[in-house]
Image 1 (cartoon, each protein chain N blue to C red):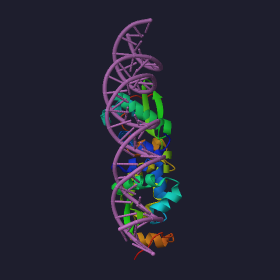
Image 2: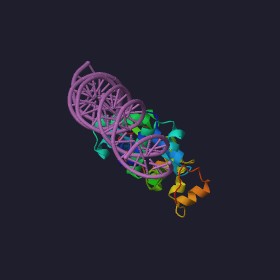
Image 3: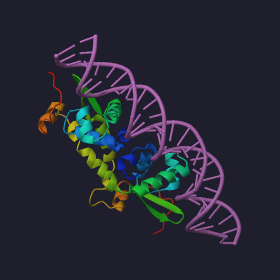
Image 4: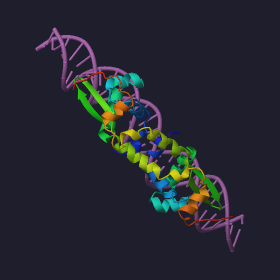
Amino acid sequence: MADVFQILADPSRRHLLEALREGERSVGDLVDRTHMSQPSVSKQLRILRDSGVVSLRPAGRHHLYSIRGRLLREASEWLAYYEHFWQEGLSRMDEALQRGSPPRPGRKG
Amino acid sequence: MADVFQILADPSRRHLLEALREGERSVGDLVDRTHMSQPSVSKQLRILRDSGVVSLRPAGRHHLYSIRGRLLREASEWLAYYEHFWQEGLSRMDEALQRGSPPRPGRKG
DNA sequence: TGGACATATATCTGTTCGGGTATACCTAGC
DNA sequence: GCTAGGTATACCCGAACAGATATATGTCCA
């Protein structure tokens, strides 16, 4: 499990990231905000941390988590390659022409 | 399974999408380009289609698949909320200040 | 040192998921 | 209709995974 998209695949992990968007949060805070059990939160935070999506700063008996952008950025960059497909003014035909039509195995109209 | 990120979580599906970036492709083409078995390709294409990430255009006995941007765009937009976290010139402190520091459960320094 | 608070891990369990093989379906051409 | 090409589905299997419960670890405070 080192794949960003695999990390983002789980809704509970995305909820954690959404809560962390506002800034550094303790585990207890995240439990309150996500309505997940504490062990679940800790478990998912562990996965997020191991994969490098969040970082941990111990503060007394609290563990403060925050977002590290690097991996999220990688995901964003991967998706950026597909921007043509949703940008206005570009039909599917336009796209094909723009990047050179690939060989078509079958054609019919 | 209707979640974009869950769709993107599987590497084989991402490979299919990468092959489709060049334009419309038949199943056979995708089999060649991805080194997956034909049933696997069909299976993943089915998932991609059901979720709305690709669309199908029958052409004789060939099935031509192409990318539909809408869902990929949703994923991209979700990620866009996190741009602050990887943009230069913004430390973690800056982010906190920028969006108003959240309550800190524990503090120590 | 003992106890409460905060977080992490261990273990179990039901489910989901992807790949493989075999097979069914559909279309074109004869 | 028969055959071949192209694609989809059925079924089985093993692995991965998320949630829950119980328990361990660590820290503060008296």
